[in-house]
Image 1 (tube, rainbow, N blue to C red):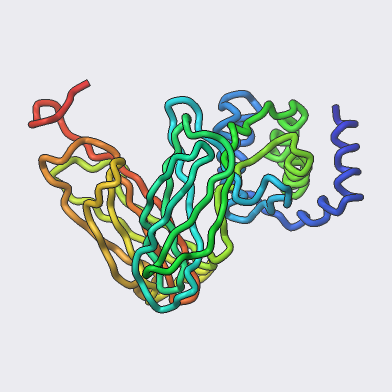
Image 2 (image 1 turned 60 degrees about the horizontal axis):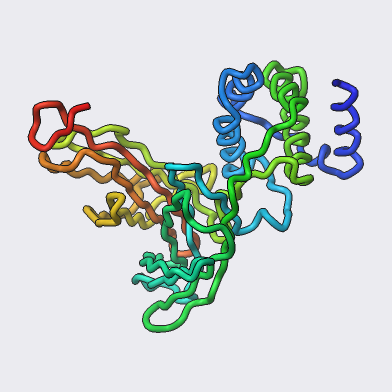
Length: 317
């Protein structure tokens, strides 16, 4: 088995992938996930999510293939997934809504509204169900009555394939420090570049130079307060005076709350509101857009509204 790994490393060296990852450092929680996966204590799906995190945070550079740009994968049966639809209007220092028309491969039309930031970038979230048709989707729209550039994205069937058994050895050795983080990443990039393993390109960072994080309660009882702290950085330093736009929706796309403010010297913006005491017990989505006037970033945060048995309109399980 190790002879196979040596052969693959040799291939990586002559292709230049190996040397490119000599300074890679992987966080301890990713290594712990890799160890549990190599010991078959967690399934492939959870491990793939940790790999997607490495790609999202740019620890791993996704090899450029024909299927890695604007391509997403359909969720499994009875599951949902969210993708970001984004583009630019070309108008700076103006904020309004862009109205998007998404034409599915089967001819059905979806209508979406996207907030336009001061940078001219628009972004919105599209929720996918497992029964969406695979194929090419066309995105058109208007902003202030003027057509915006047309774009496309592709939906494919789930790309999660069986991961070669030898790669589990790589994960175990990396977790125990027997091979370097760069060696592990090189093996992963080899699998992706050869399409042995397909990883969804979950983020389009064409315009994104800002990084945002949101912290709040994962469960909030109705009749109590939810507080969310948004943190904005450039990857290292906090960004002060960045504009934060946040709106709260339910799964029916009913807008419940809107917030707007600016980050303080620590790069933080906090907003709070009381959940109505008769609110439905359900998942709420918080969409956050941030801009410093030149660059922008978006984030979706979700939390559960809960109730206690015996309360009005509370379904007990």
